[in-house]
Image (cartoon, rainbow, N blue to C red; front, side):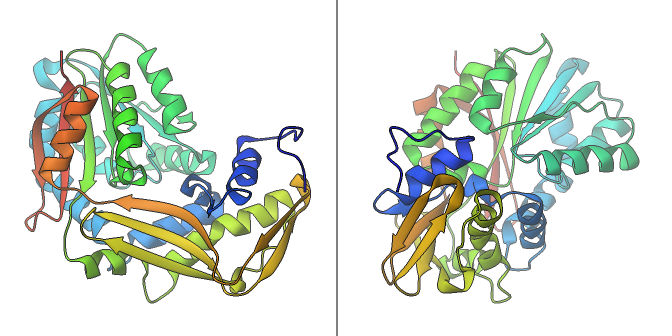
Length: 324
């Protein structure tokens, strides 16, 4: 096993895998679920009947696109539409088409950690809505927020859909929202999805479907380590496990070792030992109510100006502005 102080890493991925698998308890970041395989698996997840989040947000955007267009394009002022974690952009295309039809002046700047996802999004937009001016940006949320703050003088709208804010614990979410606040000016808007607290079983089903798509998505991080770092994880020796605490609103995903085993990661020269039933924590998916969102906004120096929800209030998109 290498000494971390003398290890030279060729990527942040390598460094975070090393740190996560030598920690106790072990952990890996959900941002590394995504490569070409992971992108496809997540698209399959969004199409699952159990994964209610996608349909809820689709319906919210479709039913409220006129109000959203009026809000974003107020006074016919041109704006840049940034989207964090754009993915395949299927939901956002509802708004993009509507903005084009209404002649609203804007440009679209999708951001994603996956270059593959961005390439496919740009290709699909050129075919489906060629009128949209698109400028892609590859990177993590934290890296790209700094870039957003240094862009042109146009009004900025930041989209953060899919309740991706839920991947952060509350202290991290406050810090993230503070960074968002610092990247916008007075008059700019932040449009963000928050999955709401609901029947705990519905939440568990969304992250542990019977067909095994979410299991494959969770295990894809091990497949990536095998492929990109020449490791020998046996995916069948791990159990996908999901838990949800309705008190805190926190859903957690784990990979659980079914037996005592050793895994070698060639590029890190790292031998990983796992005891039977030892866990690797991979993801959290936080659920919210109005009080929590208001508290997060206040702590971050943001103000909620409006919200949009579905008929069951299972999901909400809140609109924030900088609290000056």
